[in-house]
Amino acid sequence: MNSAEKPRVRFAPSPTGYLHVGGARTALFNWLFARRKGGTLLLRIEDTDVERNKPELVDGILEGLKWLGVKWDEGPYFQSKRLDMYREAAERLLASGAGFACYCKGASYAGPDTGEKPGVEGDDEDKVAKAPACPCRDLTEIERTAKEKEGIARAIRFRAPRSGTTKFEDAVFGSREVQNPDIEDFVLLRSNGLPTYQLSVVVDDIDMRITHIIRGADHLSNTPKQVLIYQALGATPPIFAHVPLILGPDRTRLSKRHGATSVGSYADEGFLPEAFRNFLALLGWSPGDDSEYMRTAELIERFALSGVSRTNAIFDHAKLEWFNTQYLQKPAIEELLPYVEAELKRAGLWDGSQASHDRAWFAHAVDLIRPRTRLLGDFSGWARAFFSDDFDYDVEAREKFWKDERLAGLLGKLADSLGALDHWNHDACDAALRNLAAAEGVKAGLLINATRVAIVGRAVAPPLFETMIILGKDRVVSRLRRALPILSAQ
Image 1: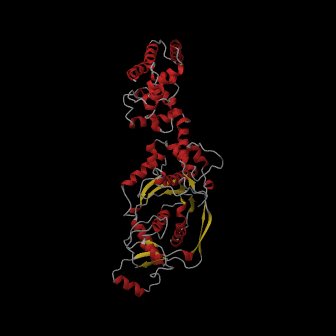
Image 2 (image 1 turned 90 degrees about the vertical axis):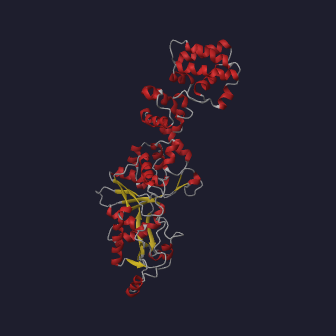
Image 3 (image 1 turned 120 degrees about the vertical axis):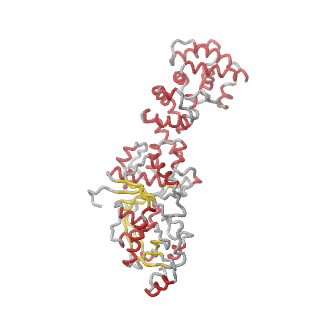
């Protein structure tokens, strides 16, 4: 690539599933690289696998990328609409002698073709190719004509070199070299006219002027074949950068047995997009120091392929939660409010609430609550009582802090004292509670803990008197009185 040329990269998912963590990390690395270099990110949907593709999953992939904040500059392009281009390229390779017609059994196969491992079990075409050379490789013109007359469907294979090596440079793994005799005569175009992964990605990347291919290390084995296709088509291969795989805590490839793997699941769990971006960026990449909490602008500024590791990354859910707490607590409160609003709407707690019509109060309440939150769902979970009068009393909290038989009378008196206050502030509420405790000969802690359960339903919440100020006099007094019948019945 010319040093003055702006890079063009692509993210190319297959609609055979939702956007998973590994794909999201690949998309993020491409996006960060493009933004850092002032380049272009293309989105390409690789949907030629007709048996496994699910068109409805395309929307899920797009939504996952949008939630993650990975915005593409061109596309989405669909391979299913570019089939003529792949067929023309295959015929060109055939005509040049770089490819040959194959009539072997299984040539009509059109099943799974992920591109990850050629010759996987069940792929009949590639099974045939595992021999040193496909028997159709050296058919004479007479023999080929005979096959055609028999009506045998024809596939097109690549004529792999029988000697020498294929080399390429990888920005992460360095210089790579494969012995050509180890490369089988792989399929380019199936007998049903559909391209294989190897052909379609190369044709697309040439046509779309891709300068860098940033993808998972599981594609390293595909690269020599693709380099051969580039050369046969008279094109210069782009710069490759294969990023390490993401493993579960048990060091096996991340899968459903390790928990959620789709990006949408983490959105549903209540993770913030920027927290997820920060976490993903550090799975297999380092800025060169011990920095962890990095806002997106800093990630863009510091991202470089030289920082990508060759070592597989470990997905640590607890670490992801740590990142989420950082993004719940550190940014300006105004950044968090839209996410909390969306969560309250999802939980049916927004319409008619004080939060919906008093923005200053809403910001104050969220700022008070957020130091004790891990996920967005906490705002509609344990913190529900801040936004709605419809909440339950936690059973364990009742059993621990409402067991004193004197509490019904004490909380009734506290409701009266608080209701008589002329000024509703921290010091006034504190004094009213402590004066009552002193007058009744009980510890202030007894009233503090019982009051907290009465007004928010939980034993753990922000400091009591700050909570009382946020809720307001009327709500606090009303909730104390609501608890009295339950306390009396115990």
